[in-house]
Every structure is written in C-alpha cells, then in structure tokens.
Length: 94
Image 1 (spheres, rainbow, N blue to C red):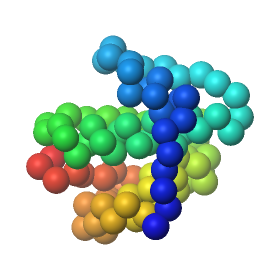
Image 2 (cartoon, helix red, strand yellow):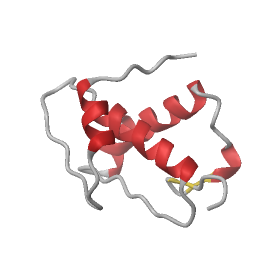
Image 3 (cartoon, rainbow, N blue to C red):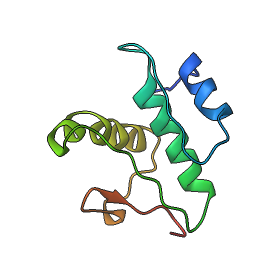
Image 4 (cartoon, rainbow, N blue to C red):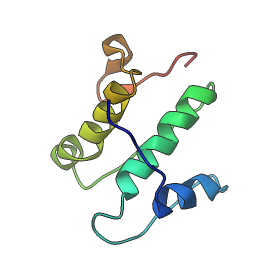
C-alpha cells in the first residue's frame, strides 16, 4: 500500500479555510495529490457536500487527477466501484 506523506502543499491546503481554495506552485510540488488527499478526507467526513475538481480537458484529467484519485483511493482501501459513475465518486452518506 502506498504511503502518502505530508508535504508543504498538503499542510498549506489543510490550513486553508475559505470556501474556494486556489493552490499555486511549481511542477512536482505535490499539489494535485495534496488537493485530492484533502478532498478524500473532506468527502469521508462531510455529508451532503459537492466538490468539483477541474482541469484543462477530460483527457488531461483522465491522465492526471482522475488517475491519481483512483490510485489514492485504491491504495488506502477506500475504492468502491459501485460509487463511481460518469467521473463522479459518491462517498458514504452522499
């Protein structure tokens, strides 16, 4: 199982409190992974909320954040195929 370590980006993302969060940084700064770890944590602890991750294009997302999201979920033992439809994952409790 892959282990995910706190990085500067992870700590910064978890410290943000506004409704809309923007994160900048250089290549390989762990921004995508850190954002997805935050989204997974939030999705597991919040009910009735909607989160949206956007990118340049669907093919771009499939090769990046969607693949990373699935890899994190599988590595942590959270993935459930029945909760994935149309590039949307529904966490327990909605």
